[in-house]
Image (cartoon, rainbow, N blue to C red; front, side, top):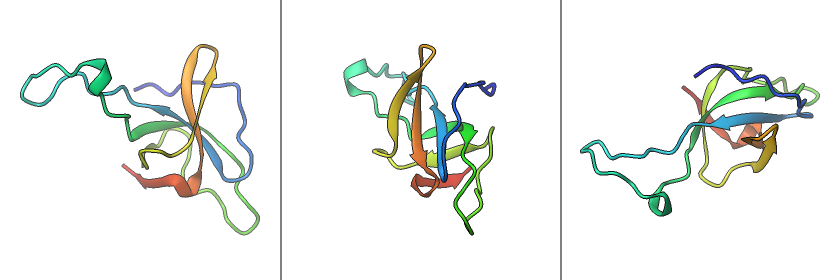
Length: 94
């Protein structure tokens, strides 16, 4: 997945994440209807804040991360959907 260029600068310990697309098929080939798709929990960091005093940021732009199912606030920038969340909502870098 190519890194997107967004015109937003998150503040403090916040990051902007572009969520991966939801799965459309199961591993066995069954097509999943839109009403049953799970919210993705994996995405790519596209913008990073400057961190807090005495707490530098761990993630960087381009990292692929895992986050909680209900983490972040959905935002729309130039027709694209993103999530903005605190770095502490990110569970892991993969």
